[in-house]
Length: 381
Figure (cartoon, rainbow, N blue to C red):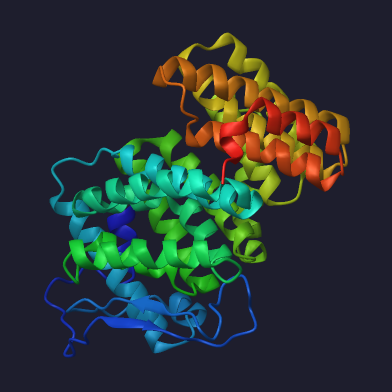
């Protein structure tokens, strides 16, 4: 159990206190050649310190963690999560925050892929940012854990794009303004947005799996682990997590039956580069979506996006175009029904952008021009 493990590590001693109370550090530059995990020389990283620390007593942890600073940050974060869980009256996950983060990431992806959409995207981004700022004060560690892949995506891309960098800085600063120094959500968010080390990633994986299982059940825990493996893949740390991924794959080969679980299994295989197995799980997922009502419709679009990614990796040019067209058609049908408005949603703009990027990459200029003519408002400058 989670508490037993922390007690074994010597982290459940409430009488133990740190003698030092370092202040919250501002964004600062760091120069490192690892482009996927280190910010550039002109970038900054926020590190937040709480007022107490504890000593890990497990010898294996000492062998894995390399520096005192790394141990200190991880200790504070895990201890903060433990204290929160012990006193939390409501351990349910608020889905608004993760969904808004996903919308924000869609905005950034579109702005990078299709600069002609920047004007439209900027309005969506302002609205989404304001909503996220208002929700930050109620953000729980469960919410951050559920958003781990989106956060890793923002972290990995911030070196390459000022959009991602500014958004990452906005989220951390919004948390700093809204939450106390020792708040576990702030500590966890800062850790994930820092240059996270392989050992820190492993410890968050283990502790987060237990927390998600206790608060949300086995299904939520499995989804979190799948997200963590994809986060490791995005951050260039897949090798660190490979043994965990292989064990998880072996344990779930015949278990998955519903669309959500099959989608998680497909993402798990994809994160380890096993594209054939990922495609097989995804085909079963899409078939299952047809037999499910609300849940199937929720999984359908993410599953189609993963399918287009796999088709790209497997050089299935024709299949990828068909899938991208289906994503656009499905998104239009869903958002028109949901929004009852003529204005294009961020989901619709994202689907149009993906198809436009595909046509541009393969120099399919006639199809690209036709897309612009069909959705002129998406490309207005």
